[in-house]
Image (cartoon, rainbow, N blue to C red; front, top):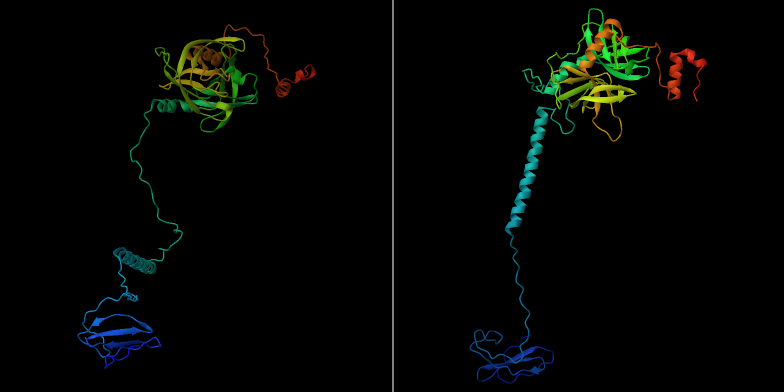
Length: 372
């Protein structure tokens, strides 16, 4: 609280209530007393306000100035440029979504098929573009296979399965050449053509020494194999394909290889033969199938392989030069001239199943044979 100026220029008294009093001295200065303290603070006054304070005078700094509370400045927030850009981006995104929804609603009303979810089944007929020209494979293996695959048949008997080739097709019968060991001792021999048609064959004749047999079926107009002429020669390393019925279930399978040997002496079940050796894959069921060159000519009849686990790619075939004369004699007379025979046959019995199969074929054995 400020008190009026003392007009008598007398020394101010010290108020007890803590108020502030001032007195003007004769020299123009005045003294301010704060509460009970008398501070020697002189001010030179050139003008006074209503309370005796100088409006524009100079003053001597007090010895212990009172701390003044700093004035609070009003803070002015400034919006940064990234914030503005983010805000504008959000607004544009919301507007874009709203426009998209409005557009979809308008299109849906005009075409109800356009819905969100599972696409409806299209009733439109769509066809892929097809080549209008006829393309024929020019690969040598494919060409050779096309020439020969219809000439190979599957053979099924009670004792197993094998393959055969159509040697000739006459006006009444078609003749099929296979291996002797495939049909030996079999009473029922089923032939399956490449078309899938089944028929039963009869044995015309066979030759155990060369492992060749000839069958015939009452079918005509079949596709016989192509035989090489006398001038055709085979070369070591030439490409070949083997076609047959491996495993008895994979009819008309084609495998490729080369001729590994033109003359290989092989002993099969005690019989010595001169055979072709090939790397073309052959398996159980390939016996009696054809070995062809890439001209589609039959050059051999597959009849054996080395089946040891440590051996791969060693198969054998009866050469065409051996086949021709033997097959010719078997078709004409049912046997090979100059081969004496005692008129009996043998059967391998190495299991209970093979024993009972032999008893079924030869009932007279039941009274004299016992399986142990």
